[in-house]
Image (tube, rainbow, N blue to C red):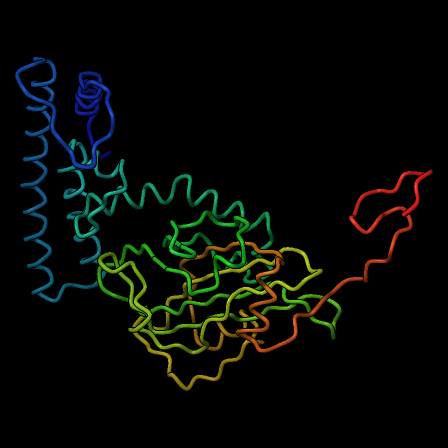
Length: 346
């Protein structure tokens, strides 16, 4: 464990000694010399942190020596894990670190924040994501759940300049008129290339009288790592430019899925700008053709409203389609939409 029982007890003592108050934007350590129990707990935690920090420095030196000597990859991974665990343990009880993590202020260049961020992601957020992906049949409609497994990175999607949305929420199509802001929280040390796709799983197909996939956006060669989580579209290769969601009138709510795929060779291989792509591709075929590995997923739902007709007219240059049986006039409904009484006339 990252803290022995007596250090955990000291941490609980610290929590009890603090006076609850309004959360601040920056951390301020409680004053010393007020509560002897608190002062003793601080001494214990600081001594433990210094001990583990020295052990982490020794592990780092051992890792460097092994690298210089050309040690096998398996041995290097074991040494790197030993260093990482010690570096985490040296600061896991630091009050400022815990405060920052609690308020979402992570410095992913430091092992302790990487550990806490990954722990936070693999808790409730990942549980909600997987639940909704399966309950709303994104998996297996788009990809085999056995291929996806457990997403290793957190894909955050923000629409219309707002905050990141929860997976599976229903949104106004107008909020996605412009490209979403994308963040892929990855825990890789070095940048790896990824392909970002956005696909509608519920585009109506008149030929089959069913639904099909339609690609709305494909950008390849986007680098992500622990120090670079925000997508820089200028650094990527746009294979299909963005088109906004346009769920047609008369169709049920559409599922718009955004997925980040790591490219071949552990994210080292690039995808050529001339790669053959179309909006009518099948996701499974596209993934197989380019050797992509899914690492992050999110999605939202949208249904028709009047703003969708503007997308057909202004973006697609098409007449907005209408699906479903036409509404037949009803004798008991007046021009104002109200029910006509039995003995009243229209």
